[in-house]
Amino acid sequence: MNKTILATTIAALMSASALPALAQDAAVGVDAGAGVNVETPAGDAGADATVGADANASTNAMSTAADAADHSYASVTAAISGSADVDLSAITDEAQVNIVLLSSLEGDAATEAAGIDSAIAANAEGAATLHDNIDGNAAIKAKLEAQGYAADDVVAVHSQADGSVTVYVDDRA
Image (cartoon, rainbow, N blue to C red; front, top):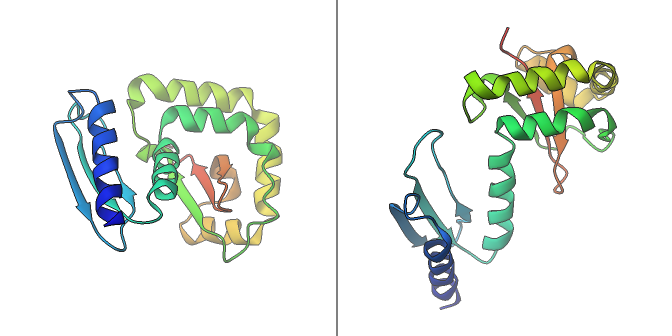
């Protein structure tokens, strides 16, 4: 009963707040093991949304929203300037390290990549500190090397409240 109410409430909120162009195809399903999951393909004016509800729906919604933001040009540009100050000491082998390639970012590379390039150029000193911090963290360094990257390929890091970290790698060369 609670799951049905939760699913109905989420569906009502989504349909009431969604723009008509984005609410073309929405489906609501209840699954004991599912959280809220919204996927919108980049560049698609209409979005398909699939919602599953469980007791952790609000937590999963916030996590999904943060993950989606972490894959945009704007998020990387914002993360670049503060990356040297991110404390990586708590990142161990057990921590979730997400490596995001700049070539996979959501958005228009033709217009938005210049902002990242400007931020990288303006943050040369911070980048050196970031690279040293990554070289000093065995877990992040090992995960980068396992995918064929080094600390010098990293342009930014962003730590999440759950203890995971997103590492942005410039693979555009």
